[in-house]
Length: 447
Image (cartoon, rainbow, N blue to C red; front, side, top):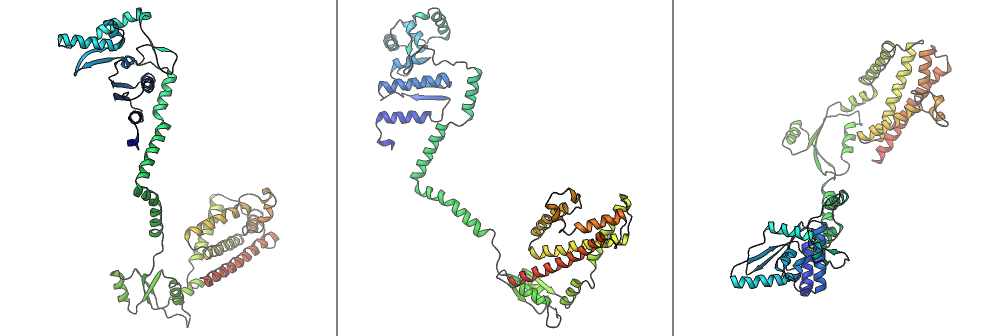
């Protein structure tokens, strides 16, 4: 694209590339060669603006000597020899010449005669001339920057002290990205991307490839996991819980069951990693599991619940000295039935949920509303309508009221509030047990 531009247009592109990153030091080699006078004037106007307002240091080489008069310091060279250096206006005054080009021609003529470069103007002489120039400023020439109406003296490129607000503005300009720079970089990257077709296709397809690999490789279920089975369960007649459990495991392609008749063989295969796990059913697995479920030999639930109730009453009566006027056996019975009701409700949660996190969320999600609405924490009279009517359909509401009557009033079973609390406990136990059995059967047949 650049190859098709003319010489002047190429010069403009080169000049724009040099300024695109807003440099603090700018070195330009004949930036106005091959451009028309109007564009040359605009280039110098922009350079003067950069030096004045952005404090950019600019070093320029040029064959157009007169345009260098806008700089704050010039060096005149011929054949690699520095003939003179200093403020352009001071050089003109020293030589009494009408222009900077005339000064250069005079220096060249003198150099040809003496065959030696003239000594440079010292800094001391420059300072003296500056003092004289300040005293006789009306004799100094001035020039106009193109596009402006105010005359600017030869010291236009000198650093100008900024006020506090200007410094703040400069700070934000330097800290925040320039929108023009961002647009230029975006355009440049877009052109590079469009020209490189394979790279463009790869960058657009890469997200699809990554997400496809992620979804295909991560999160899938394993298949055909080898599991060894050694079953010694004799069952109960024709009924065997181990066979039902194995039939449940064999659903789908997740597990591949391998049956063994010798325990040592399945143990060796597990040790040698031929199978991922082994399942061993004992001789009386079905009978023992049924006994445990019906509570013939396992009383751990009763012991745990009894221990909790004992701790509850010890803390309430002995530690906190809660007033108690009724029958201790009746209060323990109400608390025990309420605990059984909660355990049976847990069977519903376990039947509905397949994961522990789901069970915890469901249990906590139902526990707090029930506690807040049942009158256990706050009186029912303070609950607004119609929530107070909903409270009477919750499991702890009437049993909690019966417990308070036994504790604080000494009431017995002959009072309606007390036997209603006992009856409600039994009703919810039966209701929850029925729901748990029904849900379990429905989910079992669906599987």
